[in-house]
Image (cartoon, rainbow, N blue to C red):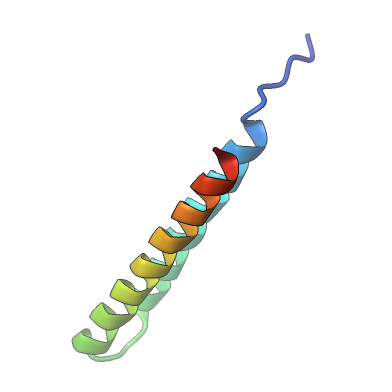
Length: 61
């Protein structure tokens, strides 16, 4: 009845992280600025997200 998957918390965290990344990306794309600056911001955000995901993976495993 009340069976709860051990990975439920991880799924919620990953969903939140993905939603945050998508939201931040959309905000950057919709903000008026030069294309060069937008691409640099997206690249920096992708690098930060990759680093965060690696740290999260090492904590989980």
